[in-house]
Length: 460
Ligand code: ARG
Image (cartoon, rainbow, N blue to C red; front, side, top):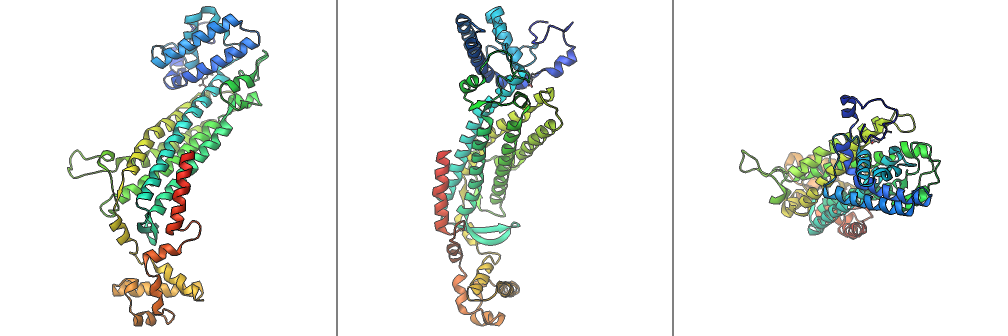
């Protein structure tokens, strides 16, 4: 049967349903450039092993280079009969070289080939992903810089908790993204191992040089165990985890943008170019990017879950189940590359409303902790200080007053230790400035973070 890679021992071609199930070119054609790069490296190793003459090598490299150009231009593509990317490309090579094309397969199996291709594909695209992440980091840092001195309500349980600088909150998201970049860098160190040379599972009896192939393809080294090399998909699962966690970070950022741009919050406005309207309600301006960030996080988690579940019962070494590793990986990567520029644009063009943020910052008795800590610094045990401050809140709530509106008599009535000096801590600016240890929301600590995160984004 025409160019099947495994025709010899078979009487007839596969049944149509078998062929349809088996076929993966729709998905794995993305690997074609990497498969061709692997083939060039393999041809050189065959030549050094004396299995391909210099003249044959030259013709082989020539044909592979031509094929690469045709694949890039879209003039060579899989046909119906091709089972997978490897088979399609071998067909292309045979069309150019005749029987010489059949020499390239020596010492190589689709099992080590596909594991290599997927690593190459991911290592290349993860660099693009990291670049997108540093753009988002920049956008968050830029937004934080523009509103560097604006106080805002800090929330826990989505209730006013303590005032913070809005920049502090924005930079919290930037730290998460910086960790994602760090995870990708760390991932690459483990992914930089080449499976080529492992053959189907046991290595090759031919005098190949796996380390030379590894070096040519930009890997740090070749795998130490051929069985592991063809069956290991840790690099795919780890990537899907990093993608899922990153997706969750984008989702949480998205959720805040949804809240902040609501009429009820009114903290932020989306730029027209980064929002959508409604087909019926003319007044609408919707945060679709933020919602898609939130929504897509589900499929990233799903991709990770699907991949791990596929892997969990597999006996070593290669099993065809492993072909199912690609869709989750491609989907997570491609969706992130689609999502990130939009999220970055939305953040880079977001307008905050400092007057709304600043006015909301002290609301909900957000300075009650400062009262308690003021009492503590004059020797009151925190348990009592907490009680006293809580009574102050209860008094204000029933009297319809803010904490700083209590007169001396009312303060003393709540507790004699509430002297008029307590008012010194009842300001948002004071509360912010006081939180000046590392990690706190004081303006100088936030300024440190701005420098630190901008540096990190530059390195990334
Ligand atoms: N297309 C397969 C995959 O993606 C590689 C082919 C290996 N097939 C085989 N029968 N050993 O995993």
